[in-house]
Image 1: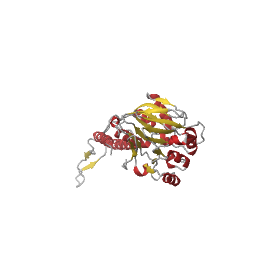
Image 2: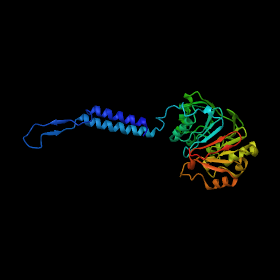
Image 3: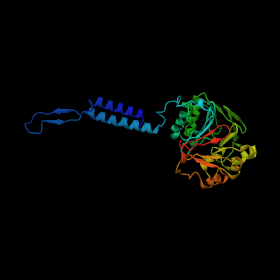
Image 4: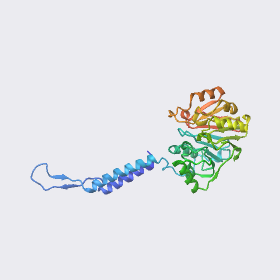
Length: 342
């Protein structure tokens, strides 16, 4: 049990005992009737009943609030076992947020960015990953598209961390997560950035380019996802959000297949068969392919056909539903994975 919850329950019990005279029921002696075994009777005062009801109500309220507000006990992150400035390599952590996406990237020297935030109920995992890596501020918060499993924790990120820029689509949706995001942005100092294909952004010694969306008119919101390519010295990684085969093909047509060659691919749409076309894989040719999905999810992700395509291309497939948070490190020449479970 969380220490704050234990303290809350102790306070509830203290209030109860004060109301009920240290928790003992009132005893009232009866007059001696001359009959054995009837020397006194036990009475319950109204205060005893009120105290018991109040105590139960406080316990129920505390438990419900705690378990429906998973972030309530999380302090604003500003300390960690290490600081992000300690990094002399590029770190990419594909955070295990269940059926969603969230990726932390820290460049040598400490500048950090976060791509998507996962669902709100998994936000504590994102906070833990940032805290464990000493991140107290983000240069960029990239939101690939406004579905809840990608922006659900975005408002909390803006409330708990210093964010310089939010890179996002202009597309608005009617959802609590999006409304919370817009409110949090209005209350923060973060600047909203609406990128175009080809726009470049520096992250320490690294740099990433926005490759998609190439259009603003897709029937499926997933196809509106931003696709990014990050470069650090001789290494690179591609992040695809939930983009499907149509935008994948548009990116190849716009930038050329040779410009997409990368060491790492964040597999599109949690490994769905609607993404990761053979043409796109042949262009990227990843050494590592990372799939973010929940174990035994309702969608059957990752789909078997996607896994077979990754095997055929020779990529080492890493999955958050199997390994937890997946962390890759680049020394500027190659990426490495130690196989540790996050």
